[in-house]
Image 1 (cartoon, rainbow, N blue to C red):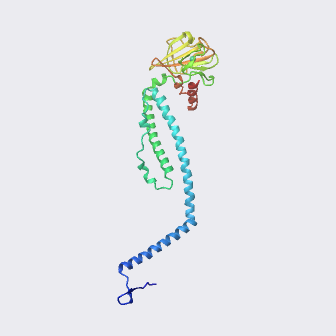
Image 2: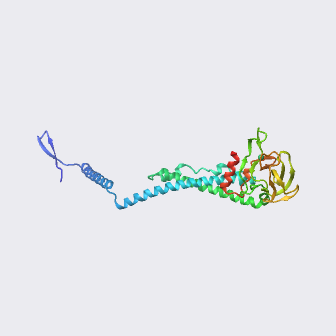
Image 3: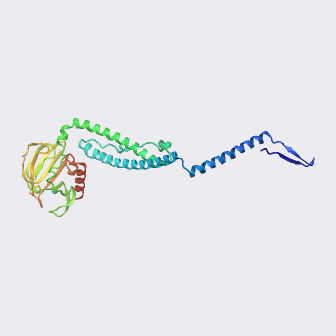
Length: 317
Ligand SMILES: [Zn+2]
């Protein structure tokens, strides 16, 4: 169909045919094309919205599955992050302190992962927050694991050059876990069971029956073995490297002053001698002339769970 236009001419008083210019013709073609495209797009959108092709249905299903999988992954990364934090804590507070190595600075342990523009390419996705946060967490964990593994390498080196130290530093519970009946008093400020006043408890009280064997918690030399006032029958071991341990209220002593002992050797038996209300071992760890919390040194023959439980009990009893 072709449009023919006429225009009224007031001079000749007649209608004259008007021929469109090139510009008008081109514009006309474009307009037709544009309307065509618009109708096409509208029709496609309507059908696309109303009926999913089998491929699209499949993709939607897969997308949903992927999203769920991502959520699970994100949770598992969080769990692993917590385990890693525990490892870092033990590394800094136990293993590294055992060798007098400084804790790994937190700036190195928790490095920045760079600006958010790192993940800009992910922003175009349908659900960018979850995917970006999961990717960022994983990036962070990779860096932390790298730092942790470096720290363990360093520790391995320290172990090689500190064999003597490892043998000597107190690192076990002085009673067999089967015979120990728990902690009756932890380290720190406590009301004294006999004197009734608030004073610093310089050790930890481990309950057990009279006669239960007490073991040296590290190798060393017996500094004293005998009666020591309120401590009753007591053994004190000098482990070198600034470490000493004291075992109080014993019933029977199995070592004498000057004797060399190894970790795990029986040195005495549990009693209630001196200022004791009942049978228990009063165990002290002295580091460079200062009392330290003995529970910190119970790590060699314990599972991580047992260790955490003992630390908790020592803090709260
Ligand atoms: Zn005590």
